[in-house]
Image (cartoon, rainbow, N blue to C red; front, side, top):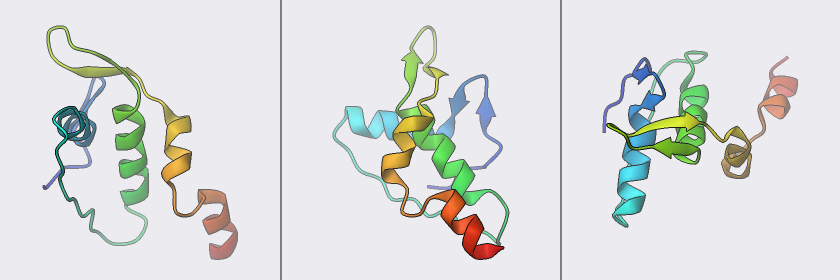
Length: 88
């Protein structure tokens, strides 16, 4: 799956939509977020998970109305502050 990092429009993030669709259908998809350092890859995926785990409205099109950023913490391999401490 290829996703543009700028695909957020009024609570619609393509990655979040894909996650919600596949989990509702007991499906699976693989995704690689590739790019040079400091381009927002971790931020994009974190935002996608927050939107996917948030509160959704389905009228008339699906969109996240309240992202759940706290739910993302359980899925982080490293904590951003730990990384920043190592990098500085």
